[in-house]
Length: 275
Image (cartoon, rainbow, N blue to C red; front, side):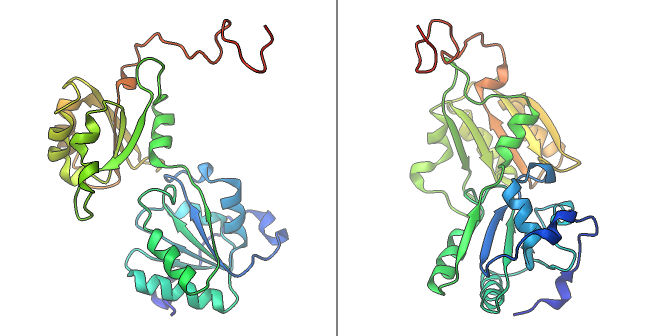
């Protein structure tokens, strides 16, 4: 299946090394594009983009600048308005025609990327594929905030989750239950339901627990706010945030803990430190 109406040949600033790289085997490469910053791509992701015959990318979530790594003659196709069946048909036809395809996904493919069903279908069709990890928004946001999510004696657990919406969350993973751990909680895909999310979090976190509201992490127009949990919904509504928003709820944002890791303590015995 071909999508000629959505085909754009991009990449006028491609890396010159692409001409010297070997041809890729005909298969699908699920590549994590990270949160949006092209410099946070893995080296492997960059090389695959430079070599691939075809790049199918989630254009609603991935900035076009990342496509500058693609070959000048690569076929660049958008997937935001395509159904799963259309995307799969496209991938299968191209690989069977002997072409290498990079399926460029936002963030890391292991989180909220909807590749589970794609991989199952490709396996059933005997189409080979590979998965290349990327930097997730929670990692990029923590770096921008200069935040360690696991501070000794304060918090040692990170929970990645979302609130129930169009995609239901299993009952055992409901937000109120997860909030009981008072861990560093990274809340994805929840801006449209922020009032409900705040109410559930307040059942267990103190109202003054700091929350980082992270909008379009990794994009040139990214923005960050740190507010008390009790103000999370109001800030979201005030700034009219409805998508591409991540919430980090964590005691680590207080940044006043004097606790230190035992790893580098002078009294800590370890394999590579003589007594």
